[in-house]
Image (cartoon, rainbow, N blue to C red):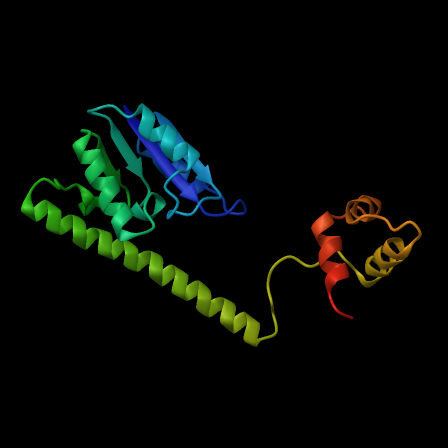
Length: 189
């Protein structure tokens, strides 16, 4: 059976283009983890995908960084699939078809894992630079706060009432999350 697996790190990201590539590659069943880092090995769909694999199956991935966020995880994944008789094929790294049981295969495996780690590290470094640049321009990032000055004033009034309302009651009254109320009221004036 030809299986497909992919992953996106955050819920805001979309895996549709990766899924389309796996479908074009002829995958009969596709597993997708959303909101997980490739450094986390116990992703639910990844676990399920591995459970159903049988010798002779082929696992297709868009790229190695979809399953492995470190060189040690990459080596482990490739070795594990080879030992279980499951062919591992990457659409972005066609040179990945190696036999880790040979000396040359083992060397190629280490080189490939190092390159995959370099790619992950470069993405991380570029993201860090982008965030630093945005901050230097006065952009902080993240979602805007729901606690406007008016809501903060109302929350303070509710908290100081007799009897005082709990953060949960205030949050319900204002239509915001409890943590937003807690954060807003704990900030020094």
